[in-house]
Length: 621
Ligand code: FEO
Image (tube, rainbow, N blue to C red; front, side):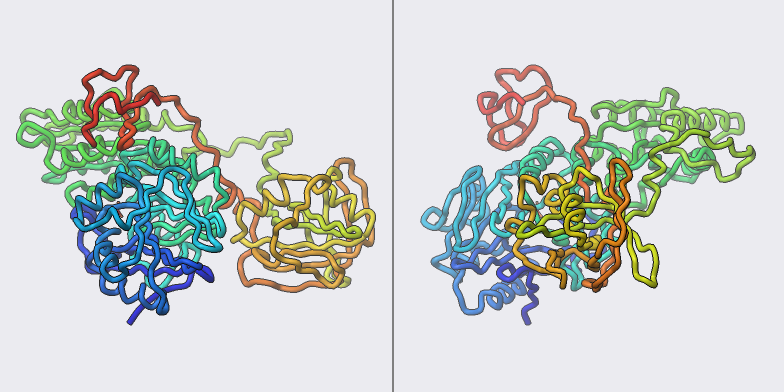
């Protein structure tokens, strides 16, 4: 039986989940399964965005047929030719003989490599910014080389503002009946899997992901539809800000990841003692036994934490096998911008420390804690001091604000500063609201965070508004307003609409698509709003920069059971984070596959290690 889910009136998820797969791509454990997403747009033309892996091919075909409801398939857009998304291409060409395949040249080459059939007669080739008109919708194509293969592109539905992002913004894990990230506790249950997916699948290609982020930042994106995992229709800033960190190799959190390889427990013992000493200094720590925890989890953690400690026994005069493999993986995944400390062990000739340091030195911008601790079989009592020094040296590199107070306090708290710290105001638990007013035919509104209830009987509220706001003038004149109490689902575009322009020279409701008015005739926001209150001004107080209105509530109603948004939630989840300051990298990028060669010079005889094209196909970054 088909299993499809509606996303919008004309967009349907027709993908499928695989919970039997042990190792994704043969390498990554997926204990919670994986989804292969495919999306069908039913407009005047029907358009399928990507197919699925062969393991779920039959369910997918059933889904597609059900979603088409007797119509034929006009277009298949192929964003990425990795077989987990393209296994059904050939079957679709047989089933829908009139179907056109929309792709770029590199995708076409891969189609021919993977599935030889007559493609040329049915292919519509697209390049950067080409569009496809399907009726009501216009689809624009953007190239995204190396996110995750060289042929990758993404597309943007300019009509409904949907980004079909290929592997970008994907996540391990089957969908389990949900489809949207806001239907689950993504931060708690899935963010680690999103990072594990990112760091292992595209972590190596940070500059190419940054290039895609730069392109998509110019788009007004309301929804992100990736090829794996949940669709983002709310709080897209949550995942976009993580991608900005991951792609620039910026740690997400201050803390120490300790990875150890220990045959008989003595290296583990030293690692554990170091973790205790760090915790005593208020430093966050996580630990992994590299022989037990899958490497993909440890790579993901390395992308998260600011400091990395590697502790390994010596084995066959080298690094212990699982640690050697982990470090090679980390180097290949381009890990950088971290502080690193090393502990080695060896019963007769410890060499693993120098070897680990040598391998890691291939990474960019790693800062090593000078002294390596060298164990002979086990930690000796007199070496406790060395562990203390290492813990001290690591802790000293953290900003003071990142180090929690020690668990046991022995000193009295210092007296608080006597002056006024304006940032203390950020600790207020403000809400966020759209304050609307109407004067004649003019509707207007602005964002405020200063509406509160004063009394219950009579039901009175106060609202403080900056006098520079046009809405303030309108309320002074008319004595009436509405407050739309914003929900946590409110997108950043609402703040842009009502907060980043003036009602004196813009119609803030232009193109909003609704005309919802309370009994006082003033607009309110029907979406992303938990409740609405109408106020009739009883008193007005002039406080210099702001006007304070005391108002009787004349109408009030609840619109949604969602949580109302707070100022802190807005900063944590809605307002996009500024990208990390970019270090201008010197280098050359391959025009064919997107490979980046770092350095000032590109030798004339340079051959791209990925696509084997020569120096003539490279251009300066
Ligand atoms: Fe999910 Fe790169 O394929």
